[in-house]
Image (cartoon, rainbow over the protein chains, first blue to last red):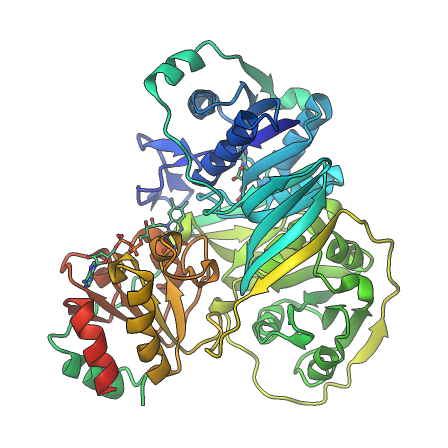
Length: 250
Length: 311
Ligand SMILES: Cc1cc2nc3c(=O)[nH]c(=O)nc-3n(C[C@H](O)[C@H](O)[C@H](O)COP(=O)(O)OP(=O)(O)OC[C@H]3O[C@@H](n4cnc5c(N)ncnc54)[C@H](O)[C@@H]3O)c2cc1C
Ligand SMILES: Nc1ncnc2c1ncn2[C@@H]1O[C@H](COP(=O)(O)O)[C@@H](O)[C@H]1O
């Protein structure tokens, strides 16, 4: 089984993002970037399937600027066999990313795509589902457990109210939730080895698909701040305030 | 053109989120049509007839639709989608699962997690865990939207809406996936998404036993739902669907009590729009205090039992 793992380069999750002063976008210059945390989980799952001899090859793919090569190198250090950058200067929307991936999938013919459930910058939670629809494949989103049988997967999904297990036919697109696994860290020897693994670049233009933005961002702004709160020194004062000031309890 | 609202069902009844969807749809132009998909959904249909602001109800009630499959839901929505300018569904596990499929097949761009609708082409949505808001314009001919339910008020009142009821023909359905197990936690507590009061616990609770022994009596006294931070869920103190935050539930109750939660940005994303926030933490510098209305610095093992007994 060949597995494709789409990985996105995003602002490190520890950093608080700021809007550009003219409101035209998000200030990213000079800030630490990293692989989207859900994609680390996706990659880890793919690598484990390879270690169990279920998967034969793991390919990491990123769509974006040349700078995304750094997370692809990380993916190689974490166990991907090869990496592909679909290069463009556009800020791609999920539909455009999925179209790029679908083109690549035509060529690479993987049986399984494991991607993150959401990119922590745009928080769209769409790409995997779109890709499955474009390909006519089954999908299993928000996975917390994946079991591979012959030509099917049994995937446990985190849903509102509990857990659901779905039996899906292959090929399939699975998106990862937080509790699927705990990703490993890249070791120094593996980082060195990764430098020799293949990293191919394809220009998005050469795929001949329409990836132009369809959403016009008019303004990026900070949300309205909450009014400052107060410190209460005892449980009695707290109850008093909740009853008489906030009026949220009887 | 009309707006298509795709309601979420729970055990053949309508989820209350349909009322927030109607409020959202009323900010657009045109009539609102409601689509109900499932098996043996007579209760939902009866409830739908009482909803204000619905002109037409479309129903697909079939044994093949008992398991909420995104592939099947997509085919049904596609059989009527081109009659609509906007398609609305909740930004819940249900809505997020199928609507991007619909958008892809229509070759339209979906707008996720809408928190404000200015008019038919202007929307606001949070990005970066709600640290920032993007005001956007989309002018495509069909606009699929997932709506953040906590950002809209529910339409109030029941009335016989005299809606025209149409039973749709079942399109060809793909057999790509099948539900083989469903484990829902039975709970007598209010639903986390719709509860007026939420008591939420974090890593500070220290153990699963402590989580339940301290927080349940408090939640009982307040008729509150229970929530948790990611750390508490990862450690097994609470089930996964208790998780509040960027990648869990996003809620805005009247009162949110955060116990032993540090206030990571990903957690704040899920609760910072609550009307009143109480934080109990032993660390006076905890980030949660920066957004709390009432901050109580103290050991939760003492504070929580005292609070419970005095309420
Ligand atoms: C991709 C991604 C997505 C994420 N999504 C979410 C999400 O949706 N929701 C979420 O919550 N997190 C999420 N996180 C995790 C988040 O970054 C934090 O790690 C998490 O919220 C921390 O949980 P916590 O506050 O319970 O634990 P901690 O940060 O460890 O805080 C525990 C707190 O308890 C206090 N405490 C300890 N003992 C006591 C005591 N006896 N009395 C009083 N106070 C005490 C401590 O002072 C501390 O402030 C996500 C992270 C990533 C990378
Ligand atoms: N530019 C990109 N390159 C590669 N993969 C991506 C890209 N954008 C999104 N993805 C994948 O799609 C998932 C969901 O992203 P989103 O739909 O944007 O929330 C991510 O976790 C990635 O696996």
